Structure formats: structure tokens, C-alpha cells
View (cartoon, rainbow, N blue to C red):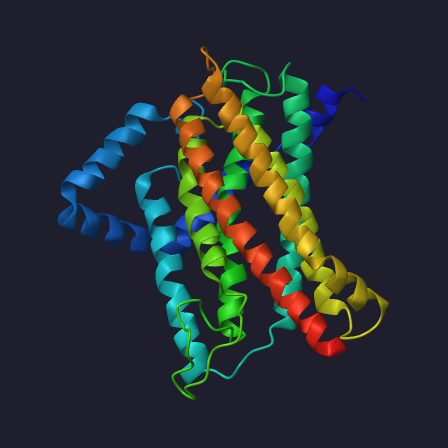
Length: 327
């Protein structure tokens, strides 16, 4: 089987794209319309600018893809922003602290499988379509352009189920980053998974990929998308195994010993994306939208800084703990 035949065989069906969007619209369509109306009332100039920007900059392939107007993107970002503190409040005052082990396992396995499909699909389609690693435009007339556009759209849409990572943490009673002291006891809150880094990354990545999918659904976007999908295979597979591993034993010891390697791999990913963006910005003739490379370059810098700080703080705490045990 040739690579092109393989790409055609694993192509994301159009029906999956449009049916996914239909389910989303059936669930949230009236709320999205209500939000859009309210935003046009309160911020008419801003919403008109976003609408004009979308109309003027949408790639021909993106015009065939659903959920690529400002309202659904803003709705998802607003929902995340409102839901996180609401669930934290519910977990503290209304609901008991939930374990959600089975649900978390299914969620992690689902995202592992989805990430694997996206990685294989984007990587193989890129290898079958492009003749160089970087500086690739999005030619709407190339044979695999629509196949790749659908995969980039799927990558963009996959950021919505990833919101569930944060919601699970909230329902399990993790204290949010903005709480330094527990108001109920007055004691200092222990380090939590619900960090500023986690919330910033999950909140910001969806709007970022909205603009990438809108203006460049293919080409140089493939590098970031396939790399992130590969990292997420490792990350969500780790979460899946961690949920079924016992609290002690060889598997748990292995997981504990290597958990910070996931952060290191993520940082390598961001550094690689930064290198790509920097390279594209040095070219006189850039085939991919230049302003998207600028956006990704500075966004990756923020992630490198936040993830680096997270790694240094946690490894420092780990070393202190080891010294305390030896003492």
C-alpha cells in the first residue's frame, strides 16, 4: 500500500465533521446565539471587527468547515472561564469531593485514541503532500488539501473535550491557583494541579487554534498539530495507566519516577514550535501567513516560561522532600 493510499483510507469522513458540529449546535446553539446578541449589544464595534476579520481572512477551505465564526469560539472560552470557578465553588460547598476514577479513565483513553488518530493522520498526510519540513502554504487545489483541513479542524475541535481535564480537577476538590489560603480553615493551600499554567494553557489554546484553522488549515500548522498530538498520546496514556495502577508497586514507582519527563517533552515541543516560527519569520518569502507565525512564536515563549517555572519549582520541592526523608 502506498502512502497516498493509506492517507485516503484513513481520511476523516466529511460526515463526522458536520455531525460533530451539528451535535454541538443542538446542545449549545441557542446559548451561542444569545451570547452573540449580547456581545453585539455591548461591544458592537469589537464584534463587527471580528466578523469582518473572519470574513476577510478565512481560507477557502475554512469556509467549508463548521464552527469557524467568532461566536462559538467566544462561547467556548467564556464557558471555560465561568465553569472553572463555579465547579470549584460547588466542590467546596455543595458536592462531596468526587473521585470520578472511571469517568477520568474513559476520558483519558478517549483522548489517547483521538490524539493517536490525529498524529497518524496529520503526519502521514503531510508526508504525502509536502516536499519540505517547514515553509509550506495551504494550496486549496492540492489533492490532499481538504483531507488536511479536516484534520486541522479536528485538532482545533479536540480542545473542547480537553476542557474536561480542568473540570475533573475541580470536581475532585483541587484548590484553584487563586486560593493561597483555605477560607474554611485559614491554612495555606497545598500545591494543586489546578495551577495558573494549567488554566492559562487550556483557556488560550482554543482561540489560538481558531485563528490558525481559520486562516491556515494545513501547511506549517501541521508541524505544531502533529507534534502536540504525539505529546498528548504520551500524556493521556500516562494518565490512563496512572488511574488503574495501585498506590504502590513497580508500575506506580515507574510512573512517579518519570512523571516530570512529560513536562520536559512538552517543553521540547514548545521549543521546536518556537524554532519553526523563528525560521519562518527570517524568510523573505513566507508561504504561510506571517502574522500566524508571529502569534505562535510569542505564545510558545509564554508556555516555555510557565512550564519551565513549573518544572523548576516541582523538582526543587522534590529535592527538599528527599533531603527531609534522609534527615
